[in-house]
Amino acid sequence: IAGITQAPTSQILAAGRRMTLRCTQDMRHNAMYWYRQDLGLGLRLIHYSNTAGTTGKGEVPDGYSVSRANTDDFPLTLASAVPSQTSVYFCASKWQTNTGELFFGEGSRLTVL
Amino acid sequence: EDQVTQSPEALRLQEGESSSLNCSYTVSGLRGLFWYRQDPGKGPEFLFTLYSAGEEKEKERLKATLTKKESFLHITAPKPEDSATYLCATFSGGYQKVTFGIGTKLQVIP
Image (cartoon, rainbow over all chains, first blue to last red; front, side, top):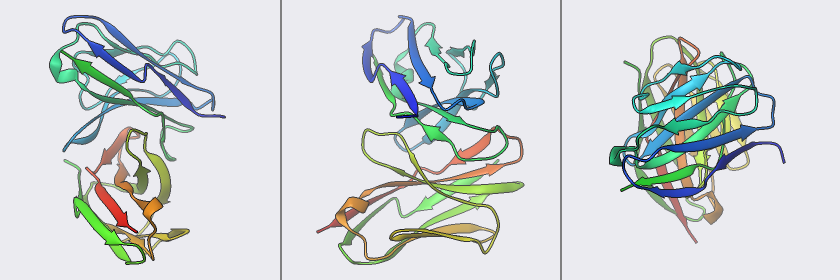
């Protein structure tokens, strides 16, 4: 079934550790996004990529990095996790950057202790 | 700064009791408005895109409408399986500018 696959589904992490959340899509969408969802704050954009080889900063990029080596994969890395990065992370994609709805993965729940 | 406000935060309905969810927005250069459904522990699922004031979209028991300042998601004769959080999001200006509301958590009681 076509869509977005995120891994891991859930993770508990010690503060200071490095963590990479994986995201793969098989829809050949050009644009990909990482959001975090926190209670009372809604979905906030962390980083985005308009096409393979390019990335950009969203609303809350500090402490996170991304790469886009190919069309399908868009990993999100926390270099040194902090408790405030405890959240649910969603990867999303869409065909065109300037139109169209976002398709979301099922999320990665991250707890930083 | 673009703002999207959804109300109510939570809504409890009896099965068959129709109601509406509101999404008001203050957005510069609106290009579109999305409605999503999100089930617990899942990612948001796309429902509708509305592009201009006066536009309406329907899907089963759901109808979305758009004015220049707000959007409504009307739920007609809801069923328990309609229970979910409904998210509204606006799309404006630069192509990364998608602003989400916090959502309305709908519970439909049998």
